[in-house]
Length: 630
Image 1 (tube, rainbow, N blue to C red):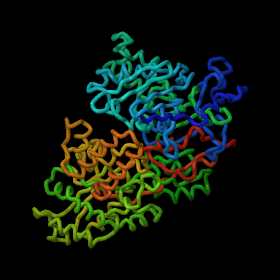
Image 2 (tube, rainbow, N blue to C red; image 1 turned 30 degrees about the horizontal axis):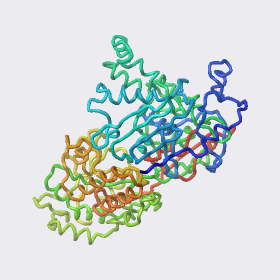
Image 3 (cartoon, one colour; image 1 turned 45 degrees about the vertical axis):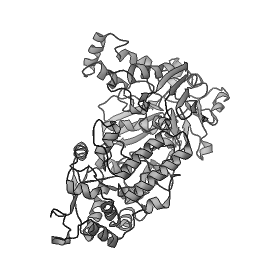
Image 4 (spheres, rainbow, N blue to C red; image 1 turned 90 degrees about the horizontal axis):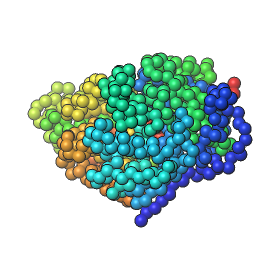
């Protein structure tokens, strides 16, 4: 039996910090003086999470100040819970998983997870955070047919059986699965986490089990929703923090309800982290999100209107931003993106056109397109040669990386491309030296995108010339994101352009679901992904032997209780992925400009930037960022 225990290193230090009188945060001090809010020492858990700021090579800071950043729309307020990144378990820059909200987690056989909460931990409104908040989420929401008509989320189901939930005591809960679930902790550590707890004391007023239906209906009408279910959903949504009254465990709580042009987030008085001196985090009192059109965000950033900015900035903005350093008090760093490829071509193996479907399902076609691309030209023209020419695969920063994954079918070899295309029967040329399909049509590939990333168009313009050299025509079509994805799922899209693997820095303990058909969002096999996600009730069952093998290995990974076995499975899947070229990468390790105020401290100069698993800034603890004294 495997039994391992994960405990926060140095967490106990919080128990022995001297209880000296501290200067309260400027924004909270008036409430403490009036007696409306307990002093800092009384607001902390008995065993807060201690962040050794100096041990990270940073400075210990002071409380106070407002950080301003710019977003492109009101929906982007969801970036704050991602940046704040308070999770039951969380990743750091080292990609290691560690307790955060939890004091500790016991794991047995990769299927029994016992969560130990921090004694005295409280929600942002001061109410206790206890096992009751997990029970409420489990019984009253997750297992309530009013919310989940088809039963609990698949992340809580193993071999067809829903997990068992137990309350051990007021600050201890347990989830037990019938078989290993190695992805359980990574799911609760995700940027958009699996929700296992909710503020029961607040939300019961919106639940039919605890509140009269007439009262709920009246409140639903006031909130402009149809019924109590939608009312509960609206008032409980933490991923998009639109309800300033909803208690949170994040570093900053929302103070502004939409619609607004500026959203203010204010420090959580009961946040569970402290630095090594005992000062409660976050250092920053407030975060302000100013809404502006995406087209002007770069210009506003260059004139110092943002204290921390990466949203709506691209590498093509870097030169202009660096020049702005000379006239405005800002600093520009370049972080390396953690995606498997900055821009990737995704032939749709589920497209309804029978000729193109047959071609795309033949590995020779995918390999021919890949070796026809001049990645060196793309890198030099669009990334100043600073990226890495590569297939769409894991990065060198991942412990799973092997050089052969990056180089597989990624060399520029037009002779080989021509040979493979001829073998496929595309050896008849028409006007413009473009090949003809078996049915006489021009071998013209329509590549579709959501048109949200100008870099995609720049890459496609170059690839169009590369393809023409081997007798393939390429056309670009742009449509709105929802329309584009609907067309892909319906098989009407021949080929898509998107970024590569979202998580290019996985460890063996992170799920390899991205490199197997697992969801309908995967543009190279949307029907196969839907089939797997819906357990065969929708979509289409895959038939390619290599794809079936990826699904078998994905299941093997999910059933594994040994890390070494999971690493071996990853290796086998990455080998198939590289050899079969299900996605055609171009350049990875692309650089992301990160602009900060010259006064803002503790922002790394060199780091990885990505959604999974780093939560953009989240893994680097923005609660430790602070402003130098003016």
